[in-house]
Image: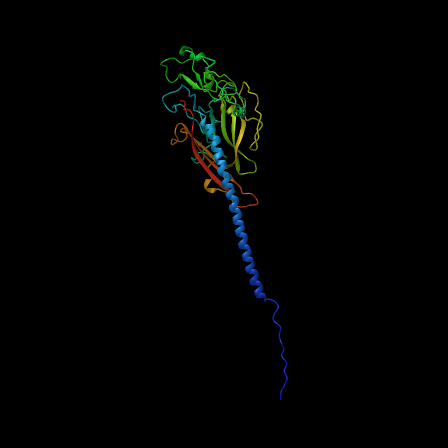
Length: 356
């Protein structure tokens, strides 16, 4: 007997089990996280690399600007008792804080108060005061005006004949030198034959006016580098300032009411007064100077963002050099994230003239 049978066909499964779904989602999330982390790392690296490239250019710009300033400066010594054979003179002892003790020599390094024996523990950086040799024939109230002015010849021998040696003190002088009318043959070092002519806002300055800041309103122009705090940040502004007649009392020099707040701005200087002329902002050289006690860089706490040294502050520095050390800091943009980046720049700049 043949019996007919029917087969019950079970259709194949149309989905995944819960375990398969969980494993698939896990693998997917791992891949997404990995790709995201790779993109974030790449983005951070690109952002930091851009900052490093910017620092490379900013460092070159700073060195070029400061080399132009300091390379055209010279020692300005007016020690009590005159010039001696001692270099520096024994009675010349500059203090680390020029506002408390008027410096006797320039360039002068101001390192502020000392803490635990460490120099340079000011809030934002060291300070450097200096004078610049006069390289152009003329006077300008603002250094900016002087830099933009064309150079003119001081002596035209085709129009003015040379004079005899016994008439030298009545002859036209070089823009960078002035003769000492009190000099006599065989005189010692206390009465030098000539003296460098420094930049000034008024002219002509006599030999004695060029040799000191005693003639208020008629003296060399005094420059300085300072680091000023940027409110709301942990970075300082490197500012070059000038006084068109500081006078002999450094502490009496006031700050001009108008201040530069960003790079590229300019200030119209006040009229040169017969009294003490204030510090006026000339230019902002950098907006990225590291604060002395920046918590993001624990190994550099106590190290100011800018340090200056001459042979008066460090015996390893040569007598015609100024050593500078700058630490730049910048934050990556919000789009790139990442950590703050620093860059260290250090060099020594030789001054054009050494006058003792």
